[in-house]
Amino acid sequence: MAEADLFLRACRREPVPRTPVWMMRQAGRYLPEYRAVKEKAGDFVTLCKTPELAAEVTLQPVDRLGVDAAILFSDILVPAEPMGIGMTFNPGPRLSPPVRTADDVDRLRVYEPEAEVPYVYDAIRLVRRALAGRVPLIGFAAAPFTLAAYLVEGGGSQGFETWRALLQGDPDLAHRLLDKVTAVTERYLDAQVRAGAQAIQLFDSWAGLCGRADWRSFSLPYVQRVVARLRPHGVPLLYFGLNAAHLYEDIRETGVDVVGVDWRTELHEASRRLGPGFAVQGNLDPAVLLTTPERVAARVREVLASGASTPGHVFNLGHGVLPGTPVENAQALVDAVRAASVPA
Image (cartoon, rainbow, N blue to C red; front, side, top):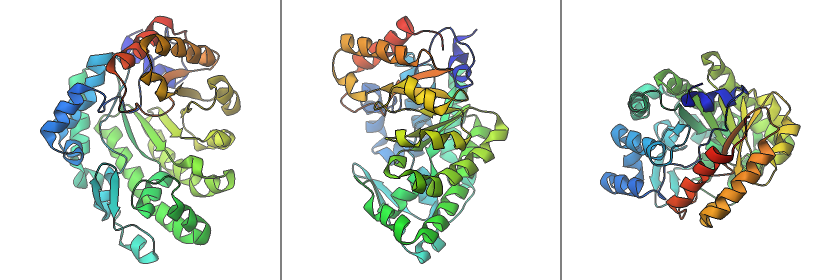
């Protein structure tokens, strides 16, 4: 079996000779070659919007580290701008104007993404040509709940109190917003697959803010809509929610193929609660990469042992690579997975 098949086969819970590995935020500022490209671009938004540069950055961890999948270099907030939202990064995201009233929701545009953000799809096509089948390419977007959280809050937040207050105080308006955001997300991801993405990951980064009842109301049905739109393409669908262990029994209803697990839950426990119909992805604590190569390798073996009994395991971090990560530690992670992984 070709090495290029490892990630896709594991996502489908098929036998593989070793566990595939990639890392969330694997193309980022811990890599000196990324910093050089970003300096050439001038700023983060320009980097995202320049297909040749975004493609170059996407390929860097494949060439440097030998990971088993590439993930498109972009940002989960890219779909917001054509909806009528100003977007800057300094250094974190700032969205203006925030969406907080019925009039704000009414003003949001549902658009055709290939016309409005063509640079995303140009980058996908460039990456696919450059990869030439070496490894698959993952496309991605924020899950509707998470994108809506940023739109309402106007940027990042510790607890997204404004968004949570809207959920509780005006749930009808929240659903109207989520309906529009989902319409955009469906189109955005469908076009990614048609451009060449071979798997799709939904980042529901703030799902953990919800209790089960609220998640079932404000996230689940909208994830299901996105999954239903993408399912006919036949590509693996991945869902990652940070701090969402209390939702695993409910996540089973999303219809995805792979569930990302953060570092707070053992893989075998997540797999047991999800059931045999799901592969799991994760879940090394990203802070381990701030230690030493020896410690990284030891912790990798522990994660592999926890995932050994699952019907499919894609090795990953429990969240994204931290900016201060030494490159040699990221390399140690990939090397340790390759050396010590057991068949999934």
